[in-house]
Image (cartoon, rainbow, N blue to C red; front, side):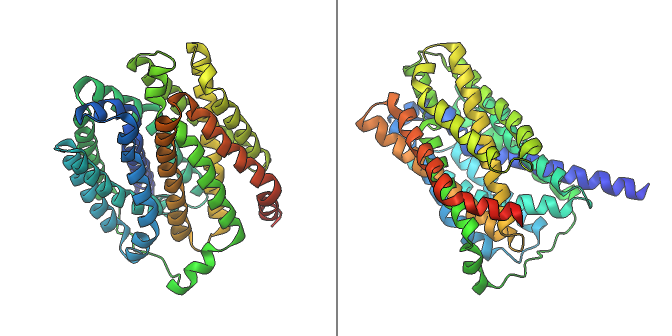
Length: 393
């Protein structure tokens, strides 16, 4: 009975970590659906308001590794309490932001919590999992992350459109408070197990496979977010869709992400090259067809589902390769990967804003596609041999 209760508590804590991942991923990307509302409230244009995502992402990219190293020796339970305190306080500030710059300051506070959270969450879930269930624990985190796109971002967007974008941030703060209360009840003390000397960290991060993963991630995610950051105004202006329809399209992107996670789990081991190359090709197709597909709701839905499927599988392949390349330094490698990923997010939002200002919003899909093509060529001519070496080990 005691063993059964313990296992139930372990899986409950892992589920709470997955829900925490859902909350963190929701808050990172919910401005995508609220950019027009936020821009209107501060009398700004959408292109400049997109800096909310750029500054957030670049803050995470700069802070992930140093903050992870600073907090490396902290008990994970206490560290989560601290992170959630910062996360909740920053959301309250965002809810009452009196200017765009105060909202930006709140987002930077959230980014600080985000930077460490994503470095420790997956390794913590794996550590808590019973023997033989580590992959299942990782799957919980992936599903939590995917559900942010399926439910969190569309629901957050709807709340923001009905009650105001400030209410969205305050609701996230309330949900985060409930999550940390549950984690305090369920999580035992979890001492840090890090024993990697500081002087060896550069050697870990210079491993060829990691360097290739980091480069490809930066390029692909930049291309993705050139278009995805501005998908709401794009669909409204080019496709002529209402805000409710755009929310539905965002839902399609997220829903297909869940399908992508299932496909990855089924085919990644047997087809390690194809599971990466095919999604990049379909990402190229979906981005290049974004403009044309927006003319019809049916093609727009298909395009968004293909897009969400592709980027989810690509992201999961990248994260799995990080773990393959650094099983002895997972927290540090994951922190670096999170930083690189967010460089891509911030760069995509920034480049997308310039495309809108100097070309037109209709060009964001074509520009994003060029980055995906570059990543495919780099993989075929440079990175592929490192994938194969890892598979053959």
